[in-house]
Image (cartoon, rainbow, N blue to C red; front, top):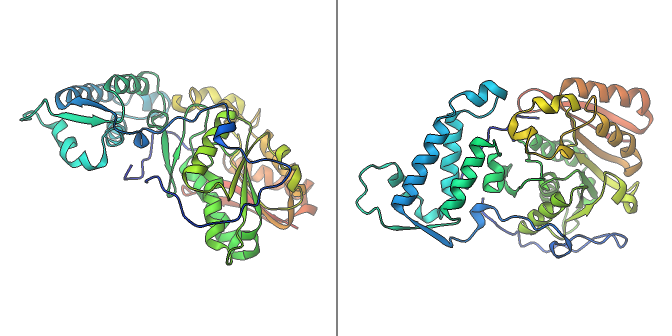
Length: 378
């Protein structure tokens, strides 16, 4: 887990640590924060966090590696031509990342080069592994034959300076979504520093990526001990469990509260009081779902992808409700499918909701695609 890993997922895809800064609890009295003990779904442990409880001989590991590499090489450009999926080069790179997660860090330099060697002097040496080789054969076959996303195979995704647990039922956070945190810091908090002490909401939190990164941004901009907090909302019990686990792993239980529910419904106790509302909602038109890359359309949760006929059902719901949730001067930023949706939303706000907002603008992502609509409550 040493490097940024960019998967083959199409666009709109660190060590475990805790930050020992005491922050007073500020949960609402009317809604209890969710803990893992109260969640029915048990989050899966990412491969790199599992203990090295298994072992295999170097010859057995080499045999698996050769098989996995040949399977990746057999793909060629087939997936690229089919749906812009990963080619053999990317799959072989993923295989190297999988090996890095499978073997303890201190053994990388000693073991990994020997897998490529044809003349190993000690093939029977035992190698400690975080999962049995039988499982590795299974998951790599799933990666190639079923197009299971690599992030689900290893159980995590690198996002900004975070490594977030992900699994089936949770949307894999994408690089372009990282821009939302830049907007929070560069636009909202720099222009209105007092927002760093308020309550923010991340709607449709998924893995908790936006909520966790926002909480860290609020803390870095806080004046003294006065730090804001984030309420993360998701309808999916799997997402709630995974987001809660990620929040706990980063030691942010006192700053990020995960609630289960749909959009604004779990936020009635803070209506009109929010300093900021952020969301990467479903925005893919229903008719486009079947044409998505297999890793996305066949494996990621449809609840987090399908935005209705035009892709704007949930975006319009957010626009309609956000004015009543924000306090005066509060900030919002929503991700969209691109230029067409951005312009549609801005026109809608200006024609139907202009009395409630100011400084509405469209922001492009790292690729230059118009991706975000943001603004402030009057």
